[in-house]
Length: 183
Image (spheres, rainbow, N blue to C red):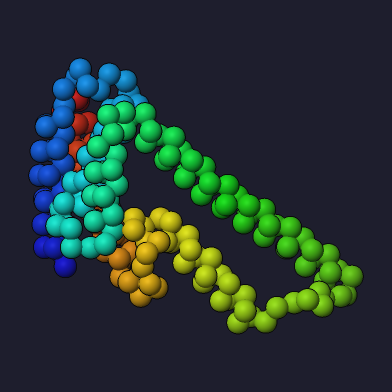
């Protein structure tokens, strides 16, 4: 397992550096936002290619990058979409937290009065709903997750987490290395 993580990190770093070198022209990337989008896109492509397109999430990342790169002005379109998705995700999480607080307040109020809500659901139903909601959220997070069955979704998610962890390790190492070089 350790050698797999190490080799995955090495593959990712090699492919990411190669991708960054191919398009590192300062004329193309003038603003900080353009550079940020480029780094993220190149990191996604490098991560997917490090897995060799053997997983559904890696093929979904390739497809997304290809779709974005075919358009001449894909740089302008990426942030709006990403912002929208991130905003929707943040709003849904906020809504869930708020609704939990409201429900908690209602339950506490009912307990204080010595009453229990008559429309209380069995624990099994609540657990099924919670699993369904979390599965739907997972489908949104994992690239290509919308078209997977539950078993594949879990398998792909685990592989995606391992790959993201390798990506984070490489990026952290680069940050530490650049910090040592600046000092």
